[in-house]
Image (tube, rainbow, N blue to C red; front, side, top):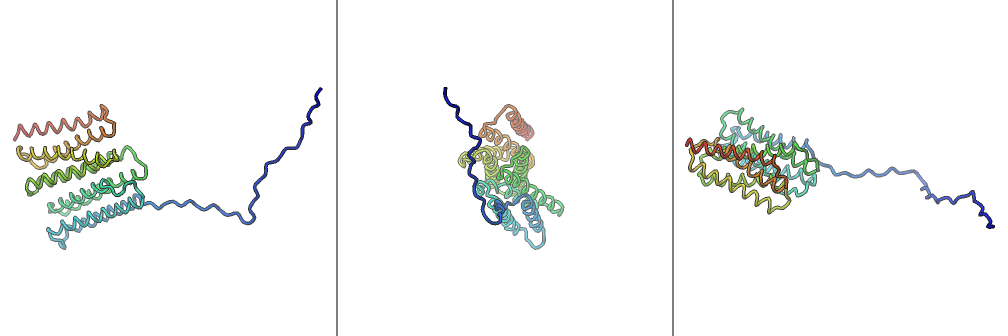
Length: 284
C-alpha cells in the first residue's frame, strides 16, 4: 500500500516587478501630424474668387487679363500643392489634383472677358470658387481615406461643368479652327486624365485612356464644325455628352465595374449624343 503524498497548503508566488522609486510620470502624448482641412480649402477658394473679381477693374487692360489668369492658376496650384504636401497625400505631385481647378480658373476668366455685366462676372467667379472647392474636397477626402458615394458625383459634376464651359468658350471664340481643335483636345485630355487616375495608379494606362477619349472628342468636333451649321452651345453640349459617355465606359472597364446599370446610364448619354448629331445632319 503506497503512502499518500501530503498536500502542501503553500503555493509559489510569481515574482512581482519592483516599483520604481519616485513620482509616477504621465505617458507622453502621441504626436499627430497637423493636417489642413476644409477651412483652409474654403479660404483658398475665397481668395481665388476675390482675386478673380479684380479682373474686371479698370486697373487691368483686356490684354493683361490672360497674364492675370496665369498668375491665378499658379496661385491656386501652389495653394493646393501646399495642402496635399502638408497632409502627405499619396502622389500629391500628380497632375490630376490640379487639372480641374486650373481649367475652372481659365473658364471663369475667359467668360469674364466676354461678359459686360458685372453681375455675370461675379457669378462666373463664384462658380469658379465652388468648382475649386468641390474638386479639391474630393481629393482631400481621398487622400485621408474618407471616400463617400457622394464624392463621385461631386467629382464628375465639377469636371463636367469646367469642360462644358471651356468647350462653349472655345467654339464661340474667333480663334482659327486649328487652334480650337488643339484646345478641345487639350481640355479633353486633362479632364479624362483626372477621371482615369481615380481608378488606376498606372500613369501610362491613365494617359492612354485619356488620349483615346480626347481623340474621339476632337474628331467629333472637327466633323461638326466643318460640315454642320450649328451654334457653339449646341456643339459644346454634344461634345460634352460624348466625352462623358466615352470616359464613363472606359473608366468602369478599368475599374472592373461595368454592370448593366452602368452600361445603360452611359449608353443613354451616347444615344442622346447620336440623336443630336443626326438632328444636326437633318437640319443643316
